[in-house]
Length: 211
Image (cartoon, rainbow, N blue to C red; front, side, top):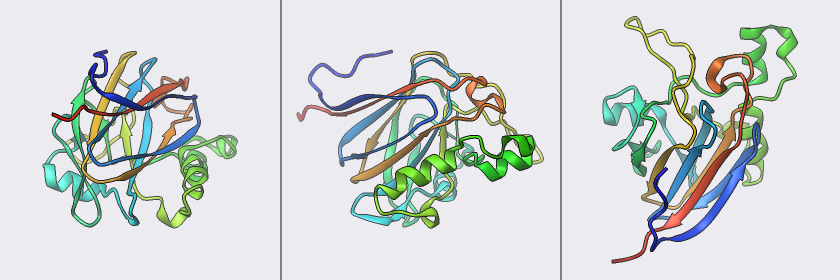
């Protein structure tokens, strides 16, 4: 994995434990690097405008703007106001979904049976972390799934299959406004999005040197 530029200022460098939620502000001009430390770990992610939390990530606008089904280098992350929130500036995996949404206790029950009803899920992670910022379940919108492999067939059907990310693969985005980033380090163990074994990830936020 390429190192952070030597003249950059590290704002935050932390490990997010397996199955847990996390959040932080990424200021305009700062970059956030999300590292799949062990490989095959889905990272469910939401972005909100830090100055107005009613402006938030829009998967529909993002896909329409780029004319592609997946997120990778060069993708602009678009808000529901049609503004660019961040841009993907580096990506060593090349496959990130924004159609399959987040797992929940309800969807686990429907897809995998009643025995899974009480298993932890990404929607619950989002609700826990969103509440720290005054947000509620009404504010949880369709999300990005970094490192999640979701092939779409010609008829438009899709399913979650084995991830292709390797240990140390990362995606890096540069903020074009102050954004609140919410992450659920996906706890799913009933489909292969995490290789059936959730693992920690690393997040680095840094400020590039001016000039």
